Image: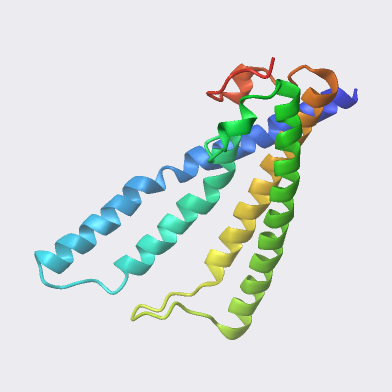
Length: 185
């Protein structure tokens, strides 16, 4: 019963993170268009925009931050393999558990600070220091959401690795995880 509840939690987190990660990837062509439009306006029309640079920074920030949980899900983050690949799968699970606990701690700090910065941005009407001067509060909401989602993904990974460490079996099949890595067993 507990195993089923943990499996459902992990599957729900995987589905949510995959949906957001894949959805946010559709902003890449928008980012490319904004940058291309600015280049065209600046160098061919000799009339640079006041909004393209700020907008491209925001879009890139959204893609990078909201894609972080999906990158974690796909195990696309940098890993130091010198020792990791030389130990047993259960020892790798222990290494992952330690790493995920540290990451959750730092992600919680980022989430808390982002909420504080959001409140501050609303209270003092923070704007970006540029000619266009867009509001900044949306960026801090996105950072709080992105860090919360990364925390959820890390908690799911932590449960999966803990299950593997205790039982020696995978909690979720590779077809669900959709990760290009060697199986745990």
